[in-house]
Image (cartoon, rainbow, N blue to C red; front, side, top):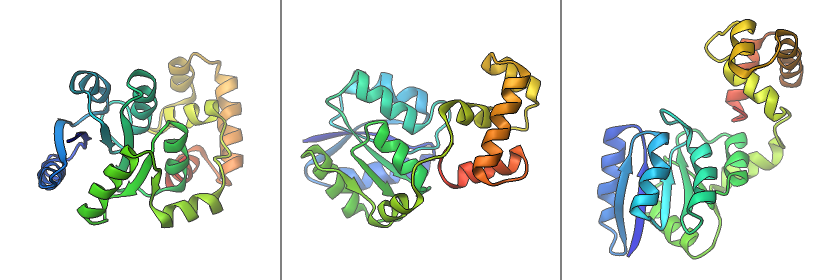
Length: 201
């Protein structure tokens, strides 16, 4: 029996997925969580074979949790299942150790097959997204530029960002300026939107 952990913040979607997967003879959903912060502690307790993670979750993201799971429970395979098929997300998921990346609009039979395949050691990636990721190339942002843009998401001031990231205001301005240049935008909010659209944040 393949034991699965399911991380999805929308209750109805989570329940429906668990119900459909439990209909498979060889799959059992052993744990369900609604936030990113619950993923690793729950996985350490339930010891799933495969973790199905959404990306955009309250608390830490599914991508951050995937990297943490890889380090703390290497026996658990991670399969990202998301609404947001962005090339940058795929690249970051692979860097975080995910074995698969699927978009939610596929049939549940494909998801069950993907669970079996990642457990068998295969990589399973949505073909359309794989092609888009290859043509998009890597994120042009450095990790620090990404941190600064992420901190700017809610319209925070330069002083707020500097305080949060323990940087000088001049350094924050430099990072913001570099990120705006690399995203080909006119200001920090446009840079945030462009980076999100490409899955770089």
